[in-house]
Image 1 (cartoon, helix red, strand yellow):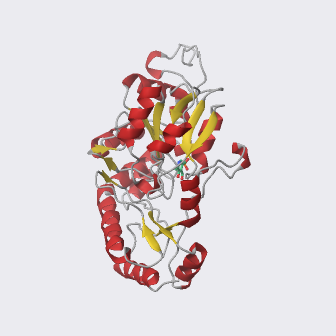
Image 2: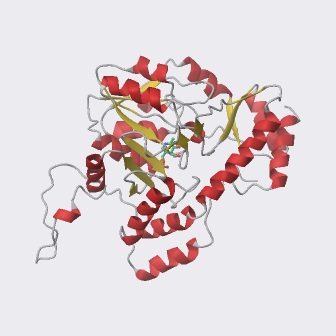
Image 3: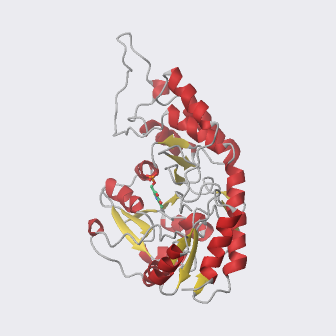
Length: 364
Ligand SMILES: Cc1ncc(COP(=O)(O)O)c(C=O)c1O
C-alpha cells in the first residue's frame, strides 16, 4: 500500500505523446486550455499556470509588492516552500500559531503576529481543509495586509460555498507529483483582481507583456523591461498531463471524501486518537487524513508492522536555521508532536481501507 498515489490518467499518455509529436513544447495552446479548464471545472479565478507551487507562492508575493523590510505571516506547520518563498522576496517570515484541532493558521494567531511591517499573510490549508478565511480576510483588510492562500494541499476544496482559488486576492496551488492534480511539477496562481492577474501573467514570463511586444523585423520582440520577471510558466506537455488528469478529478475527490467519512465513523472512538475537527461550512480536498495520537512513534511502528504506511507529511518549519530560530507557538508545538496521517488516496482498495481501520483499532 502506498502512502501517496501519483495519478496518471490513461488518456494522458496519448495527450502527452501528441504534444511531443507536435514539437510545440513550451507554453502554448495546451497551457491556455488547461487554465480554461481549471476555471470551468473548479471555479478558479484567473488561474495562471506556473512550473511549481513554490514559484506560484513567490510570484504572488512579488505581485503583492512584498520586498525587503516587509514581514509576511505564515504558520510554521507547513512545508519549507511556504517560508522560502518569503525569503526569496527578501522579506521576513513571521510565524503565527495554529488551531490545534485542524493544523490551520488561527485568526487569533494571525492577529497576534501583526506589526506595522506586516505586508502579507499566507494561510496554509493544512491537509486540504480551508482555513477560517472570512475571519482571516477581515483582520487582513483592517490592517491592509494582502492575503495569499497557500492551497498546495487544497485543489477542489470549498469554503462557505466558494471554491478555494476564488476567495482571496491571491491563491497558490501545487501540481507536483503527489498532489491530487499533477502535471509532474507545476502550479497555478489565482487572483480575484484582474490587474493583479495581468501582472502575474506578465511576470511569469520574464516580465515581457507578449500582447504588447511585437516581433521586430530582426526577429526579436520589442520590449523595455522596467522590473524583474521570471521564467515560471508551465509548458505544454505538462499541461497536456494536467488536462488529462483533470477529467476525473471530481470523481477522485469524491472517493477521498467517502474514504475519509468511513475512517471518521470507524476511528472516532479509538482510545489515544483525536480526529481533527470537521467544520461543517467547508469541504476538504482530503490530501491528508490526519489525527493526533498518543505515543506517536509507537503508533507509526505498530501500523508499519501491520502493513500500513503513515506519515507526518510536514514537520514545523521554524526549526530550520535559515529562519533564524524557533518561535514560541504552543498550539503548533502540541500539534507538531502528535499529528500523523493515514493513506486516503483514490487508489486504495476496499481491502486496504479495512486493513487501515483494523490496524488502528488494534491499538499500539
Ligand atoms: C504547503 C505547501 N506549500 C507549497 C508547496 C510547494 O509546492 P511545489 O512542490 O509544487 O513547489 C508544497 C509542496 O508540497 C506544500 O505542501
